[in-house]
Amino acid sequence: MKKLSLVAPDEIDAAIELVTGESYGISFDGAAIAACRLLGFARVTDDMQTIAERRRDSLLARGRLEQRGNMLFLGEATVKE
Picture 1 (spheres, rainbow, N blue to C red):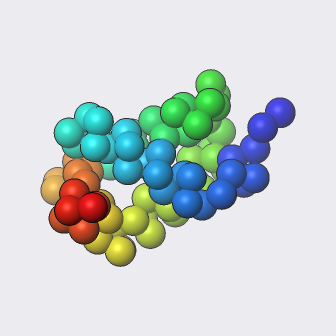
Picture 2 (spheres, rainbow, N blue to C red):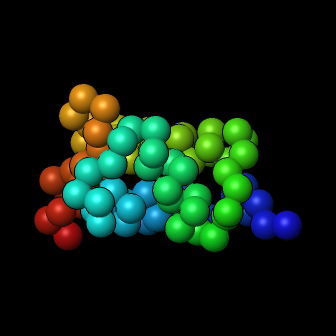
């Protein structure tokens, strides 16, 4: 059984940014679940969601993501790269 806790934080961040960018915005809660699925997890447990949500919050704090209402979008720093 794979565990999200064994996935590098940078990989989780990249998955969150990818699902956000490909959807041209994604729900605040949906980003964590979609990133876990992208990483190959068919079932997302509460622990996995918590890990992904912490990574999402870190991306928000660093300006890599922006929140508008209940939606997430790529931040300007991410788009410019």
